[in-house]
Structures are given as structure tokens and as C-alpha cells.
Image (cartoon, rainbow, N blue to C red; front, side, top):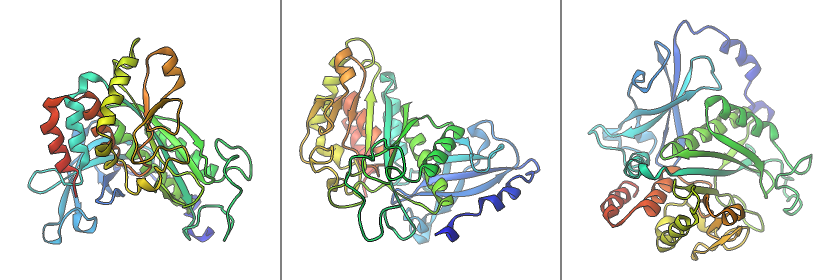
Length: 370
């Protein structure tokens, strides 16, 4: 495996070379299978606003986003961040995908989500996403697990410390620092219940910025893992059997929920979520039924329930929120492989919407199909 680890020490002497006033912008986008793609572009000057970033394009037939006879898909920058790998004035650019006829690409879920966020901006909806993930080696074995066997049962690994309890802390720490450098609002990390599984939290972020920051944080995680020859899996049930799955618990609050007496609005939101359980589940990640079994700190995929401090519920109300009477709630249903634009979009529509928003949902549904 060591031969696959990148030679970052050798690379360092080249990254220290002056760029003669040029800036490298790494454009990121999301493909048809929720994978991150990227490519670099040289710019002539330091970027100080989105207006400095040109529209670009890529071969959509190679990413499942366009047919070969009309393969150009355009990249429209929507946000940029300091690049922790190239550093200096170099940046990471998050872009939306658009078709040549001026319509959003059918896999561009950000466009629809942003419309929903704008329509309900007065609600000031905050999100916090808890991204769980699993580490694998280059042979697709769970990282650091005994070859041909299993580690001891779950118990000592969650928030564990010490050899035999946690592995790959170097990868996790490197990713933490990379996120902080890039300006991602990463609020914490911890080892998870299954060995070789970790979590980091992003937020609170308001509106569309939640999806933006989570996608960029995932890019940073994959890039860091490259240097250690480690693979990152966001599958919600990476290993069958008596092992925890991986989720992306979604913490939500509106301005009214955060005020004294906010429990009334939390209860109203939960009632609305109960009525649209199945619609939410369809957008809450592929293979999520393998994770939502009613075991391993999950509710059943077929059942909606809520409870105070109940990690076996669909919606958990933190004990402190129930005591104080205001705050936020946690939707524990989303899988680790969600598109955060889909989850935050339908969440805002459900808890902030009304009958007048039905047409908006239909449009949102069309754009997220296929």
C-alpha cells in the first residue's frame, strides 16, 4: 500500500515555486452519480469576487450528464474557497451545471434548492449536517480491520481514544485543518460506533450555503484521503451484520424555533414531516433502507416517529431543547450519501411551505427525477 501513497514531500519543492502572478482555480461539480468531479484552470489575477470567475465547460458524456452528440455542459461558479492544498491565492470553485440551451442540467439539484431557500428566506432556516463516513483500504477492505476477520464488537470505538479503538486519526486531523483553512464551518469531529468509521459536523449554515459547504468538505476529505491511500465510503450500510450504518443526521431550526416558545413551531414542523415521510425518504439517500431497520440507533424506513433524546426515532428532540422550550430538532433519517441540496430543499419546503407552494414542489420534483 505504501507505494500508492502520494509523494507529498517531493511535491513540496514544486508547490513552493512562484506562480508569477497566476492563480489556479480548481472547479468542482457534482456528476450524475453524486460523485465529485474537478479540474484546474489558470487565471491571470487574484480572485476577489464571483464576477472574476469565468464560466467553463466539461464533457458531460463522460460524467453521465449529457449525450455524446451534445456533450458540452457548462460550469457556472456559485462559491469559492481558499485552497488548502495549493494555498497562496489559489482557490476551490464550486460550480453549478447548466445545459447549452440555458436550462439547468437535470442533475443540478442546487438550482431548485436555492429557489426554495429564496422563497422562504424570511424563515432564516439554519442547518447542521453530521456527515458519517467509513474508511477502506485500496483492496476495498474496511481500513485496519483484521484480514479475513472482524474486530471486537462495537462498544469501545465511539469517541474512542487509543490504539485498538481508533485508526487513521492522521487522516481525520488533516481533513479538519483543511476545512478550517478553506473557511468551511466545520464544528467538530468524532470517531463513530463502528470501527474505522468517523463523523464530522458542518454548520450551522443558513439556506443554500449548507449544501455548498458540505459538498466542498467532502471534496477536501477525498483529496486528503488520496495522500494516505485511503478510500472514503459514504454508503449508508457499508458492512452487513451487527454493525452501525452511516447517516447524515440533519439538524434544523427556523428563527421562530430559536426563540422562547419555539417548541410550538418545532411540534408543527414535526407534524408536517410526518405527513410527507415517504416523499422525504425518496430523497434521503440510495440504499437507505439497508440502514433504516429499527436497529443500530435508527427508526424503521416504513415508520415515522419522534421523541425526546430518542436516537431510535425518525426525529429526535434534544433533551436540552425539550427542557428550555426552544432550539432545534434532528432528522435522523438521511443517509450518509445524500445530496444535501435535496435534503435541505425538501426540508424547507415541508416545514416552511403552504398550499401555495404545491407548484414549486412539482417543479422541484421534475428537476430531481431520473
